[in-house]
Image: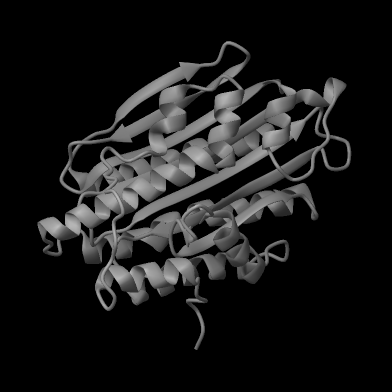
Length: 303
């Protein structure tokens, strides 16, 4: 499974980067890196093109020994000690920040983790998900994004779309702001309650669904006109994105506590962001409309 998952995430990285290169009109910068404790990865970042302010697609295949702090940061209630602190982890992670404030930021991550030899009950699991973070609300975009991921979930018995959607809303909660980071999508962790091959098939299907979930949205929004004020609002929302990633995100914490490559870990942060003192949004505006759904998440597939 280690090799199958590593092969899959590298293939997905190639497919997504080829599509982004065609859209953005520039090539990516690629950095291949190694980790002293074991393994390494391949980071690809787009910047300076016609569509993305910054867009990164990373893969990593790492192994080593977890520190107690890193083990605790993984979540899932894992109590690890002794040889069980030996680990293997591989995954693909991407964050795309478009230039146009009408086009949403998107994040996706699919990963596999083993501790020890991966033979004991509970010693392996899959995780992942994808979520949409717009600055301006287009309900048809939210519906499309969720529908594609529901369709992927519905093809696999191990998946539960309603559960994963709720998990996404709960996980991406910026508690100190009382807002979600975005409109949601799916999020899951510690998936191991089915055959390993069945779990792998589900995660692969989700990863392969990414382009169809996002590219139609991007094509609709990337060339829409916008004002300076709308660009400033996008920067304020990106400030919220930074706050979540640096304060709450478990993946960021895990990377920082396992001596990961800092540039790759912080690839998710936008190129620019904005914080205004005591910024307030006027009731009835498009900005207020977005805030309402961030404060009160919706089921985007209700009839």
